[in-house]
Amino acid sequence: MLKAKAVELAEQDRAIIIAQKSKEQSEAQAEADRARSMAVKEEEAVVTVRETEKAERSKAVELVQARQTAERNAISITVAVDAEKRAAQHQAESIRTIANADAEKLSVEAQGEADTEKLRAEAAAARYDVDAAGKRAINEASNILSNEQIAMQIRIALIKSCQ
Image (cartoon, rainbow, N blue to C red):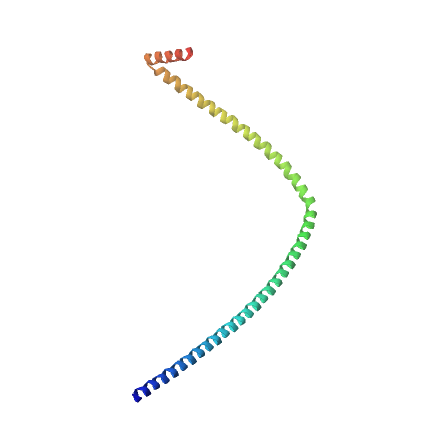
């Protein structure tokens, strides 16, 4: 019995040692997890600083570009003013050219109106020819009608005139 008791005590000691080792391992694992968490947190802080610096550089570049754009706009305004000055100097010459163009325009318009009137007369003549051809065809068709058809048309005309 003593031997069984000794074996039982040895097994309990062994279980206690295993439990302690398991506890130590769990604590070590928890410590490692905390260390990893801190490392991740520190890494994220580095990324944040890096991204902030990158954004600041981008902002500085955009400011330089905006300043350059403003300078270009100022130059274009100066060029535009010079162009307006030259345009005013050429305006007198343009007025003379416009006067000559107006005179030529009036001449072309008069010729155009004459041509238009001629085309209208030709169109009217063509319409009259078509109307005459149509009436001639109607008359020829009427001449071909039989006596019965003529009588029927007379009756229809009488009925219409009575209404």
